[in-house]
Amino acid sequence: MGERVIRVIPEFCMGCSLCVAQCPHDAIRVAFGKAWIDQRRCTSCNNCIGVCPQGAIREEVRVSVEEIRAVVNSVHDRAKSIMSRIDGITQKDGSL
Image 1: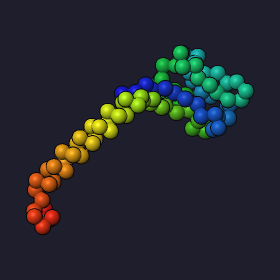
Image 2: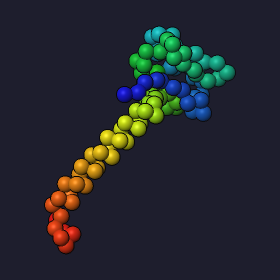
Image 3: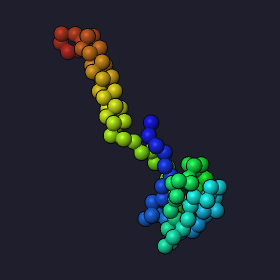
Image 4: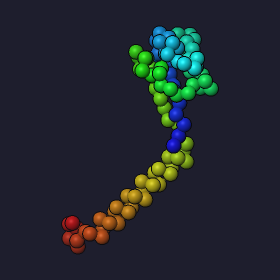
């Protein structure tokens, strides 16, 4: 579910270039003092995440509204099922 992408959080990046040296696909550049990732070249190998001293590089999972809606509906259906079972074993005075 969802598309995984590696992203630089510019507010944390100090432009040290350690991530550039670790990228085997030449997908990272530093411009104007901040790293940026060319998503067309990035394979999400995560090498850059481990070397960033600022924690400025993170993996994100992008999900669509439809995917979120499906998960919420599934949780809702399971909750209704559990509540039905609880109602089935509850005594008249409300105790289990």
